[in-house]
Amino acid sequence: MSIVDYLFAPRLDRFGSKTPSEASRIFFLIVILSVSYWSWQVSNGIVSIWFMIVLFISTPILSIGWWLLSLISKNRPEKDLFSK
Image (cartoon, rainbow, N blue to C red; front, side, top):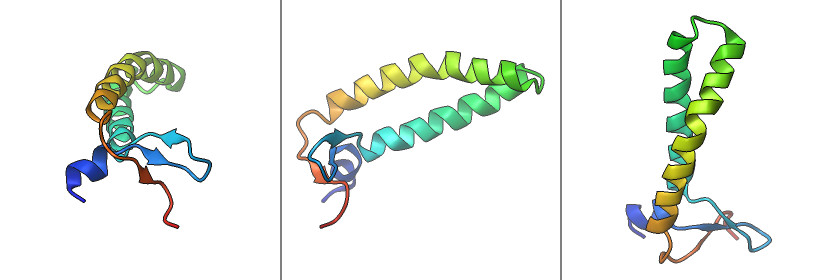
Protein backbone atom coordinates (compact mmCIF):
# COMPACT_ATOMS: atom_id res chain seq x y z
CA MET A 1 0.00 0.00 0.00
CA SER A 2 1.45 3.35 -1.01
CA ILE A 3 1.42 6.40 1.22
CA VAL A 4 -1.17 8.06 -1.06
CA ASP A 5 -3.51 5.09 -0.75
CA TYR A 6 -2.99 5.04 3.01
CA LEU A 7 -3.84 8.73 3.36
CA PHE A 8 -6.78 9.00 0.98
CA ALA A 9 -8.57 5.63 1.27
CA PRO A 10 -11.93 5.87 3.06
CA ARG A 11 -12.04 3.83 6.26
CA LEU A 12 -14.72 1.28 7.06
CA ASP A 13 -15.73 1.05 10.71
CA ARG A 14 -16.93 -2.14 12.38
CA PHE A 15 -20.51 -1.52 11.17
CA GLY A 16 -19.46 -1.04 7.53
CA SER A 17 -19.96 2.74 7.46
CA LYS A 18 -17.41 4.85 5.63
CA THR A 19 -15.47 7.18 7.93
CA PRO A 20 -13.06 9.96 6.92
CA SER A 21 -9.65 9.12 5.54
CA GLU A 22 -6.39 9.71 7.36
CA ALA A 23 -5.80 12.79 5.21
CA SER A 24 -9.11 14.26 6.44
CA ARG A 25 -8.14 13.66 10.04
CA ILE A 26 -4.70 15.25 9.54
CA PHE A 27 -6.29 18.18 7.68
CA PHE A 28 -8.68 18.74 10.62
CA LEU A 29 -5.83 18.92 13.12
CA ILE A 30 -3.76 21.25 10.94
CA VAL A 31 -6.67 23.65 10.36
CA ILE A 32 -7.82 23.72 13.99
CA LEU A 33 -4.31 24.21 15.37
CA SER A 34 -3.29 26.88 12.87
CA VAL A 35 -6.56 28.83 13.12
CA SER A 36 -6.46 28.54 16.92
CA TYR A 37 -2.94 29.96 17.04
CA TRP A 38 -3.77 32.78 14.64
CA SER A 39 -7.06 33.68 16.32
CA TRP A 40 -5.47 33.81 19.78
CA GLN A 41 -3.33 36.68 18.51
CA VAL A 42 -6.35 38.44 17.02
CA SER A 43 -8.60 38.00 20.08
CA ASN A 44 -6.01 39.40 22.52
CA GLY A 45 -6.51 36.41 24.80
CA ILE A 46 -10.28 36.78 25.27
CA VAL A 47 -11.42 33.15 25.31
CA SER A 48 -15.01 33.67 24.12
CA ILE A 49 -13.90 35.79 21.15
CA TRP A 50 -11.12 33.31 20.38
CA PHE A 51 -13.60 30.41 20.35
CA MET A 52 -16.00 32.24 18.02
CA ILE A 53 -13.21 33.20 15.62
CA VAL A 54 -11.98 29.60 15.53
CA LEU A 55 -15.48 28.34 14.68
CA PHE A 56 -16.20 31.10 12.18
CA ILE A 57 -12.92 30.78 10.25
CA SER A 58 -12.32 27.02 10.42
CA THR A 59 -15.82 25.95 9.31
CA PRO A 60 -15.58 27.09 5.66
CA ILE A 61 -11.93 26.02 5.42
CA LEU A 62 -12.79 22.53 6.65
CA SER A 63 -15.87 22.26 4.42
CA ILE A 64 -13.99 23.15 1.25
CA GLY A 65 -10.97 21.05 2.21
CA TRP A 66 -13.03 17.98 3.04
CA TRP A 67 -14.94 18.34 -0.22
CA LEU A 68 -11.67 18.44 -2.16
CA LEU A 69 -10.32 15.45 -0.22
CA SER A 70 -13.51 13.51 -0.97
CA LEU A 71 -12.99 14.12 -4.69
CA ILE A 72 -9.44 12.80 -4.41
CA SER A 73 -10.48 9.70 -2.46
CA LYS A 74 -13.59 8.88 -4.50
CA ASN A 75 -12.09 6.03 -6.57
CA ARG A 76 -9.76 4.61 -3.94
CA PRO A 77 -10.39 1.18 -2.39
CA GLU A 78 -11.71 1.22 1.16
CA LYS A 79 -9.55 0.14 4.08
CA ASP A 80 -10.61 -1.14 7.50
CA LEU A 81 -10.50 1.36 10.34
CA PHE A 82 -9.64 -1.41 12.82
CA SER A 83 -7.56 -4.46 12.03
CA LYS A 84 -9.44 -7.74 12.22
